[in-house]
Image 1 (tube, rainbow, N blue to C red):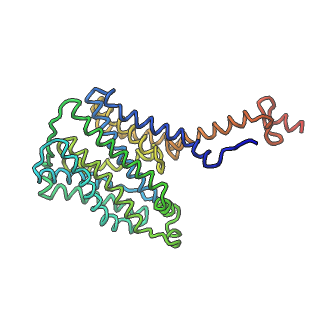
Image 2: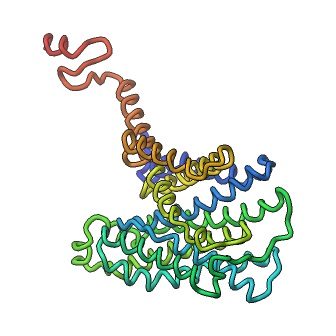
Image 3: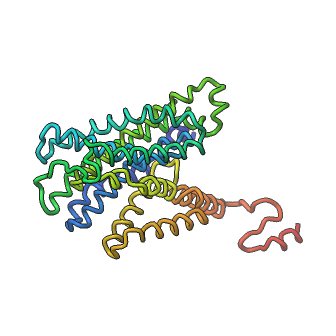
Length: 358
C-alpha cells in the first residue's frame, strides 16, 4: 500500500521554502552591521530599514482598499512627540531615549483616531484628498505653534555615540520595529479582521450589508498603521538630531511610501519590504553621489513606469507569477505520455501537422 501525504503535509512542505527565505533574510539583516563598516553606508541602511517599517504599516491599512496620502502626519507627529517629551524630561542622549519610541507611536495613534473619524467617512477618492489636506494643516501648525519651535525647529537629545557605533543602535531599533510591523501585517492577513478588510476592499457596501462594521474596522486599521509610522518618525528624529516642520511633515514622504509599496507589490508581505529597501537605498545613493536631491524622484518615476508596464501588480507578484508559469510549463513538458489535447503542438511536431494527421 502506498502512503500519500495529506493535504496539510503538502501545505507544510510548500511553506518550507518560504520559511527558509524569511530565516535567511532575517540572518542577513542581523549580520549586516558586521559587514558594512562604512558609517555612510550604514546610515543609508538605517533610513532604508525605517522606511521598510513604514511601507509595511501603510500596506496593511491598504488591505481595506484605501490609499492614504496623510501618513506623513503620523511620521512627523511621532518625531515631535519624542523630541518634546525628551526635552520636557531633560533626558540626556543614550539608550533611555528609545523607551520614548512606543510612547511617540501611541501619540500618533491617538491623532489617527479623530483624523480617521473625519477622513474615513469619505469614499476612496475623496479620502485621498482629505488626507492630503490634513497633512498640510499639520505642517502649518508645526510652523506656527510655539512649542514646536516654529521654523527654528527642535533638537532632541544628542547621543554620545560616535562613528559607525552611532548608527548601530538606530539600525537595530529600526530593524526591531520592522519585524514588529511584518508580524502585525502577517497576523492581520490571517485573521478575521484581515478578511473583513479585504471584504471592504472588494465591495464596501456589500460588506456593510453582511454585517461588517466597516467604519470601526477602517479606523482601527488606520490607527494601528499610524502607531508603527509614528514610532518610525520618532527613531528618525533622534537619529538626525534636529527636526524642522518642512522635514518632519515632508510633502514627498507619502508619495515615496506609495511608490515603494506599489513597486514591490501592494497587498503582499514581502513587496513593501523590497520596494522600501531598493528605492530608499537608491535615493540615498543618488543624493550622496550627485548632490541633487530631486534626481531620485525622476528615477522613481521611470522605475514605476517600467513596473506598471511589465509587472502591473508589482515586482513580487510579477516574479511569483512568472515562477508559477515556468513551473507549470516545466512539469507539463516532463509529464510522461502526455501529448496534450488533440491538435496541440509538441516539440517534435508543429501544430498544423498535428491537425493534418488527425
